[in-house]
Length: 112
Image (cartoon, rainbow, N blue to C red; front, side):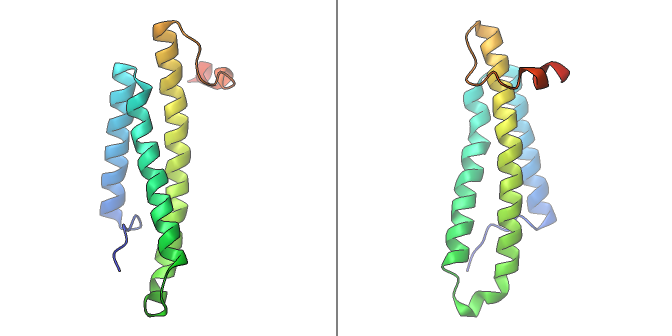
């Protein structure tokens, strides 16, 4: 059974670098549509991991711990990429003089 193992340090490092580069690109060009790409990818990865753990056969029972760790890492990346999306959306809204999707975190963005 193939799993996208985020507990592997090399894979985790590559995912962090790719996510950081996408968020940096979104911040530089001030486009929130670029910042949503990692969020959608991590949501899809979470769905894949949940389906894999729910359909896990008894011969692959030893992989359940790894998949649960991957689900926890997925949730962490979803949280980080969601906040990054909100931040870039706020930057885009200020650039274009439009209203942001969610302005409830204005106090937080002023501190950054």
